[in-house]
Image 1 (tube, helix red, strand yellow):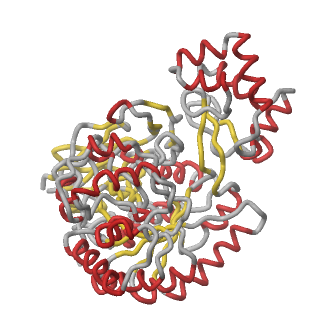
Image 2 (spheres, one colour):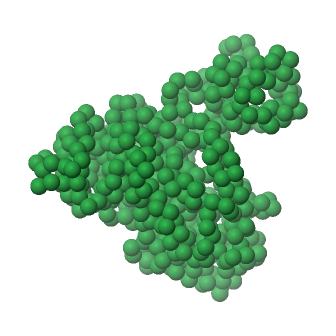
Image 3 (cartoon, rainbow, N blue to C red):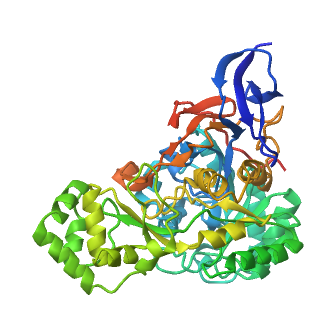
Length: 546
């Protein structure tokens, strides 16, 4: 029997947590049709000897809601084995949206998620009002990977309450209206509802976004619409009592963001907190896979405020390099750095190195301040020296969240958390965590050994697929959709982040490519070869199936 594609002789890691097994994989009409020994030839044969063959990775936290309008390839996540991405996180979405609220929702996404408003307004058609219409619009874009979306609390509140949504509590009637809007959104394809209770997330006028301080009863009323539809509820910044109230109402899946501190024992303590919370329902946490928060370098953000540094900000990279190589200019830059009050502690900042792959695992005692002291320099001098030596490519990572890999590893041992939270599509000129899946493969599996290959793949595939309510993908089983990765587990790694200006209007963003991926398939079509896109646009909008 002939098949469309046969992936031959790989180490099959099926996504269930099982150990790898040598074998073949057959694909026909976008579905996996045989696993094990495949006798028939494929119209296309992929040699996977010595390579891992896994389900495609599922990204539970992106903000690609806008970027999909001008980048249907959905980079960088698609360079890192992600074949399904969840949109609509953190309560900020573009639907439902009355025509008069378009600028308002675009402005909110800009201030909360660092996505340029002009890019949002010009890069999307804005030809919808309800959430189903938004899904219809992105479906017409033919994305390269699968996407699913949640409807956001901020947009729902604006839709029902108007300007009162920002600071006032909803009436009983308005709560019911919101629940009806969420129910309609799910019936039209949203896989769930997201909310945000993190006060630093602001509107352009400086007020916290709608829903931040909503009474718990409002979320409970919405949960009454979500639960019977077997949909997902997602929360950012919610405390355990709010999560418990949501879980006990929906009796379904709850997804939330979490983390741990750097102090000794915090990882185990955080894991114990998840264990306690799990008694109240089907709750799943996600967190960043490493220390993250802000990245800067000569090519991007600059770490010092001052007259000379402000002149530098207005220049392109070539001009900046020439400036820091001028002795008089360099002296002024150092003087302003010495005089400036620090924006953040340099003991939490780490140089990513000048290798092909960034070094995210530098020990705490090798922070930027310690490196400067070892070289009898001020940290500003060290920043300028390394920028000079690397022709401006040097990047420095501020570890604001999950500062200790040791404590994070202890947290990852919990059954109730998935490493992910790459935030792709958001904070695009501030962080680059979209390579989270590759870091799991290269560090947490290969180097640290926190997970076996089988378990690590489960936490990137069938585990998050279950949270999304997807029963047709996430594992290598006959009859499931053929979202598949083929990669070298001994070589897979991230490349260095680079700042580019490819958003509408030339707005900047970091991108990051990968090493070690041979082939990625989405719905049975080869979409990437050796980490580069083939031009295939085989992704689907995955709508809630009830």
